[in-house]
Image 1 (cartoon, rainbow, N blue to C red):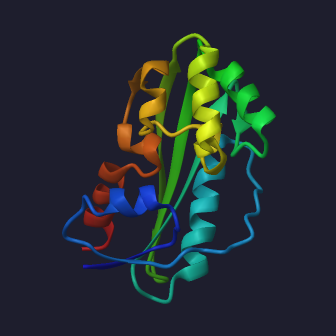
Image 2 (image 1 turned 90 degrees about the vertical axis):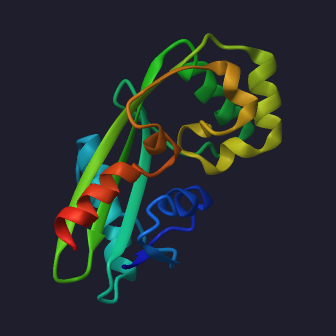
Image 3 (image 1 turned 30 degrees about the vertical axis):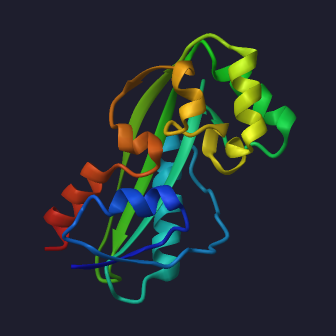
Length: 183
C-alpha cells in the first residue's frame, strides 16, 4: 500500500518505516499552520489534518503534529539558547504531556486521532543541560528535547504511554487507523 508522509522529520520517516506493508513517499508540507481550537488534543489533530490535506493528491496521505504541554502551556521549539535553558528549568523534576495528532486522508475519506504520553524528567542538572544545549539538538524539537538523544538519557526518569509517540509518531495508532479505514 502506498502512503505519502506529509513531513520532513527524519524521526517520522524512520518511525513510519516500522509499518513495512507501506510504501512510503515523503512530501513535506509547507502549510501555514492555523490554530482555531483551544484543546491541546484538538489543536494537534487540526494541524495534522492541515498538513495532510495540503499535500494529498488522492493517494493515502499521513499528516502529524507533535506538541509538548506543561500545565496546559505549549512548549514549542526553542528559538534561542536562553529559551532552551528555560524550558529545561521548567521541565526538570516534573511530568509533562506529549501529544501527537495524526490525520490520514485520501481526499474521499479523512480520519484524525491523537495519542498522549507522559514524560517525567529528573531534577535539573546544569552539566547535562549545558552539554545538550551546546549540541544544538534542542532547536528542532518541540519541548526542546529528543527522547532518543543519548546526552539526555540520565535526565529521563520515566515514559508512560507510547514511546514512539514521544519520538514524533504513534506508529501503533497509525497502523490501526490504516487497517480499520483504508484497507
